[in-house]
Length: 328
Image (cartoon, rainbow, N blue to C red; front, side, top):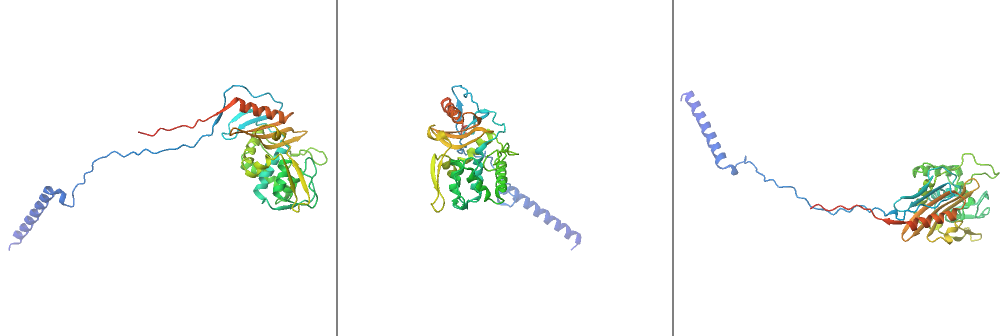
C-alpha cells in the first residue's frame, strides 16, 4: 500500500471519530462527563432570633426637682448602689483626711491575705485612739479582729493585723496602696492601717493618708458586696473573745445611725481633729440602695440622715433598658 494513502486513511478515520464525538456531546449533553451544571438562584433564608439585651439598672430621677440640703461637710457624695449614678456631689474629688474610714481598705487587705480562723498573738499593744482593749499575750482570730476594726474602729486590732503581715506594717500599708491602684482609687493614699494623722507623741504624721469622697464611695461599694464585711459593718453590738474564752471584748458600733435611721446598713465612721467628722453610709429602702460620704463635717450623723431622706423622698427609679423589635 502506498504510504501516502495510508496516512490519508488515518486522517479520515480521526476526523470521523471527532465528528461522531461532537455529535454525541451535542445531542446527549446530560449523559456525558462535561454536562454544564445549572443552578437556580434562591435568596438566603433569614430566621428571626430572640435577642435579650443585658438589663440596665434602674436609674434614679429627681422627679421633685428639689436640691440637696445645705451641709457643713467639705466634701459630699450620694451614689446609687446599682447604677452607680451620682445623685448629688460637692467637691467629691478634693483630697481630704479620711481618718478611720481607711479601715475599709484595712479590712479588704486582711481578707486578701488571712484565713478568717487563723490566730494572732497580741504583742506590743497600740492603745492610741479607739481600741478594743486587747491584752498582751491573748490570742485572737482574724475574724474577731475584723469585728474590732469595723465595729469599734479599734486601732489596736488594725495594728495587730498589719504587724503580722509579710513585711510587717510597712508591707501591709504597701498592699493597701497597691490595692487602691488596682481598684482605680487614683486620689487615695495610705500611710498606716488606722487612719491616725498624729503619732503617739501627738506630732502630725508627715506624708499623711488622704482620699476623696468619690474614691471612698467606690471603696464602700466593694466592702458591702463582701458578705462577711457587709454583715460586720451592719452590726450594732457584739461580744467577741480570745481563743480560750477567757477575755471578752464588748464592741459597740460608733455609727449611731444604725440605731435610728431606717435602712442604715453601715459602713464606717472616722474622726480626728484635723479630719473633722467623717462618715461613709449605706442605706437600703424598698429594694433600693444608696451610698453616702461626708468628709470634714460638723455633724456627720445629722447631715447623712438629711442626705438619705432627701435622696429617697425626691427620687424615683426608672428603667431605661432599650428594646429591639425582631425583623419581619
